[in-house]
Length: 78
Image 1 (tube, rainbow, N blue to C red):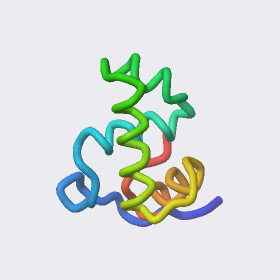
Image 2: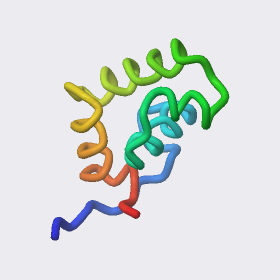
Image 3: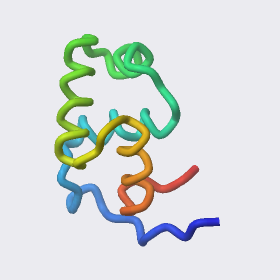
């Protein structure tokens, strides 16, 4: 089993609070539609957050963003 880095507080992550919420939902396997419903935002806003997350994390796709978040300690595995 992979050992994860120490958990990093929200204040030290390069994402906004909302982007972090979206990222947490991604780690739970949620789709864009499920994320928009959970957060009460539009699909357009959800996709904008996703694009911003991928750009800031230098990730190619959702899966790479989740893996990086876990490896960097931004999200604790459940």
